[in-house]
Amino acid sequence: MQECGDPASLINITRVPPALDLISVDIYTGFLPGTGPGGGSEMDEFTLAKQRFTQYLFPKMAPHTQAMLVPGVFACSNATVAGKPFTLEEQGARIVKKLDAFFGWAKEEPRIAGFWPSAAPFSLPQTLKHIICSAFLTLAVTVADGTMRTARKCRAP
Image 1 (tube, rainbow, N blue to C red):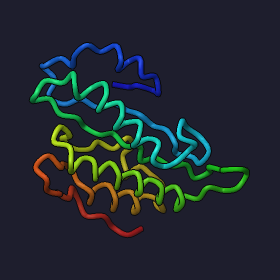
Image 2 (cartoon, rainbow, N blue to C red):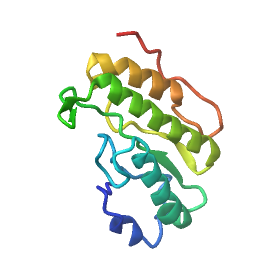
Image 3 (spheres, one colour):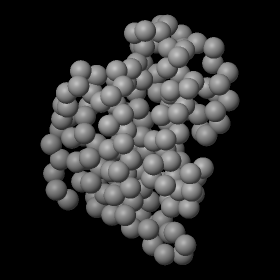
């Protein structure tokens, strides 16, 4: 489900079809400081995703249906904030903080089956690839049973 910031697509759902085993919602915001509903905090996306699932989807899901989280793991090599370069390292640090929050929630919430990255970490610029790979793939492929499984080893850039 692509929400694109408009909660109407979730508010109007009366139930999640029981034929669905997994459901996800793409919500991307706050990837640059000073932007987004929470002022551009790296936590904006996590906060909004958790609120949307908790308020609009979890109550309408069948008991067997689980959520897949889709945190934004993208960055821009030419991003600027207030006229100054916003480096890939700075962006990577924000992504890691956000992923930590998503992972903490996933460990506590049994209705979360796992994660699906919003961008293939292996198509990112090399300087950011290792940060994301380490944070995301070591994080967990699935947390449904409370364990972490590494999908693949990350090589240093």
